[in-house]
Image 1 (tube, protein in one colour):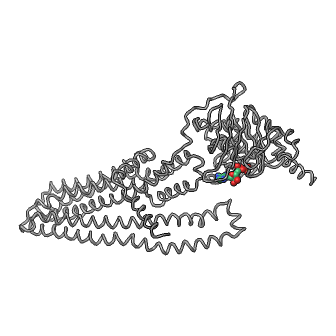
Image 2: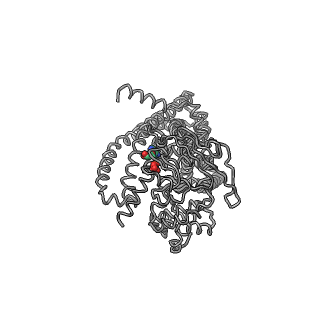
Image 3: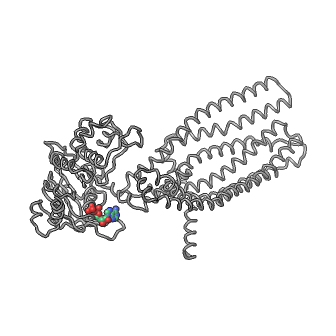
Amino acid sequence: MMEKEKKEEKKEEKRKEKLPLRRRIEITSRGFRLLGKYCPGLARDKAFHELVASLQPFVIVWFSARIIDEITGERRADLLALYVAATVFTGFLCAVAKGLINRVCSEKEAQMWACFGKIFSDKQMSLDFEDLENAGIQRQKKQVEENLYMFGNGMAQLVWGTATLVRCFVNLAASLSMSIGLFAARSRSERMNHPVWILILLLCIFLGGRSYYGASVRADKIFREWCKRTVWFDRMSAFFGNELFMESHRAKDVRIYEQNIMAERAMDKMLEWNRHSGRSVFFMALYPALAGVLVGLANAVCYLYVVLKAYFGAFGAGSIVQYVAVLSRLGDGWRELMYLLSDNATYCAYLQEMFGYLDLPNRKYQGTIPVEKRVLCQDGDNEYEIEFCNVSFRYPGSETWVLKDISVKLDVGKRLAIVGRNGSGKTTFIKLLCRLYDPTEGEIRLNGIDIRKYDYREYMSIFSVVFQDFRLFSFPLAQNVAAGREYDGDRVKKCLEDAGFGERLSRMPAGIETPLYKDFEQEGVEVSGGEAQKIALARGIYRNAPFLVLDEPTAALDPIAEAEVYARFQGIAGNRTAVYISHRLSSCKFCDTILVFHQGGIVQRGTHEELVSEEGGTYSRLWNAQAQYYTQFR
Ligand code: ADP
């Protein structure tokens, strides 16, 4: 990289790091609002816990100082008894209160990470589908998540920072008020009473705190750099150390193709990185340690002053204990305040990154028109008509047209088949139909209105889709079919039977309650690819939507199961509008219209009979190729 570019990059980095105070306040308050929404009460409980915890030592020190003064002075038994009782009682009270709040806090803090996970899953769910496939956005999400989960950068720092803020406030307020007597008390030596001592002591404490602040800023900078590189290390070790060997769908290929050699090389690289990272860790520890020396010197000056003042008769032994303790706490409070300022700058930078991801716009959710609810039943009109008008499409970031000038109307209640060679744009057509992507050119209309104007969720609800690359979940079978926790058991069974899963269902150990896969349940059942496809088909049937879209729904089925599904297809589709993608042309015979896709365009359309009779056409070539395959090997 050119020297100039490097300088620019560094400048940009610095700009990012130096957030103005106003922006930091905005970010911090937004962070607290988010915390309040996802982890209600956590910051408040944490603050209360810290208030009790940091007040307790001051109370104990104050009473202890009075007890020592009394023992070394007048030794009044009644007052001594009162002080001892008060010390024991407040100590007991604080311990109980701390214990109780601690219990609540640890429970909430344990849930905190799950709550943070919810922030990300909510955003991921509301992201436009095309953004899910956008590598840049997914990298951005991964970076933000890893920052948070590996070191608590951002949101968790905000929680911990709340505790530090309270502790700092208590330390400063209580120690300042409890050290007034140190300066007010007169000693026999006039030199020791000079007000310049106040300045010297405060300066020592200030310098100690300042050096600690400087050290934390430097250490944090190294830490942030280290975090960035550690994210890479963590990703690599998660993949090569765990996923590659543990995940069952990869395990077969790893063994057969001896991928462990690749993993060993990657592991060597990681170990080398680990050795280098030791330098960063050393400096991260060195700066605070050097600052610790200065803090120690500042404390020494304070102690010396307290002891000398007592030596010249300003106060008794009890007060020495009190002043030594509170001056050290004053230093703590000042250091915490400085640290808090540097920490706030750090977590604001992380929060800003996170908000950058959370603020990614959701273009899909801008439509407002409700999709009319028409009951899908014998008497319902089910009048949803969709029309593609001169639709062309390119995937984001790609120059290649995947669909070109597509115009087609999906007639109500009719069956439409789409055929064509691999890569001709069939699945993309379905993605556009379901508004997972918007057309690059042209318009898709529902009952004459551009689908972008409809409420996105409502629009999605009119489709039942079985994608080629469907996914089932590690939940009970019935919940998979109903795609939710609540379900109608009889309907689930009927849908499974319609999808050809009836016989297998009778062999499921707990019927429709049987858990799928073993991720969560030991007694979970592993299903074959074909069986999984039948369950996915049942899920599509269960969702009683006006449009049924099936993308290669029988690709994994054996020929008998496939024939059964075709035989039942008219019954399954009922009075819905059905769109059906298949490579097996014989299965398209029952469709009212067949569209033949080729290189992103519709090259033929018609019924099976019409298209077969168009000699030399793509459809008849595909048909003959398949027919030949069957007759040749008879
Ligand atoms: P078909 O379903 O007919 O096999 P697709 O619609 O899946 O075809 O794909 C059409 C073309 O679009 C292919 O060339 C494919 O490589 C490309 N394509 C599919 N998905 C994406 C994507 N997410 N990003 C970029 N190109 C894609």
